Image (cartoon, rainbow, N blue to C red):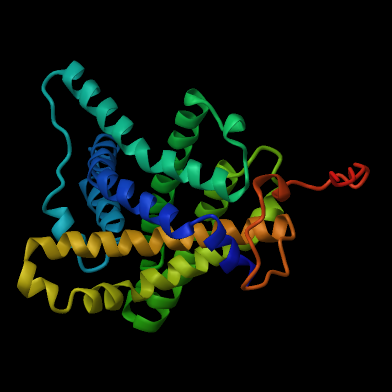
Length: 287
């Protein structure tokens, strides 16, 4: 109940909508950037390159194949043009990480004047992008390991191994991302509850994502064609952003002991989220 109230007090729906919007704008630059980097690193191993790329697109159930047809690596004859394009894509992709930092500051009650400046925000954004990339690569590696030694012949064993591996990777990614976004001095153990909720929730969404997106688009595909892909992408990003906001709110509620809460309780002020000073004297009210 306290988490739900905190989510409403912080206008979590609006925060998740902003993250969804900028995530939608950034998904194609991010995928293009990712495909380009993977192509440069694994140019001598096309099989591993395709495996990692398909694992990344597998994060988008049902619509992943359509996204694959729209993404191709950058191939510029001029090194300068390639660098300029690469930097432009990277800068445009930082929009979603910037909004995640804003959402985290609101959740933790960080005053506006104490929020990070331009350079720290960019560095945090790059760390977040790196975390996402490592999670995708880690999922691809674990999926490949689970098929070694004929495990793939047993569908149940393969499914269980893949699910466990995905949950472990998601837990590490959530924990690292929440630590990057949390205020300085936040302990790792304070972030573990939200990381567990986010990792388990995202693993379940990955396992049941095909059914969810197919259900959401069961009539849209025939009516809207390509626009159905956009609807599916927005729907999937919205689920992910709401899950991340709830995971962050859980950590704040537990770390600052913001419970019990009542349905009709007014939202606390920003200053109320800080640790109270028990030695401070209470001034008498004005007559």
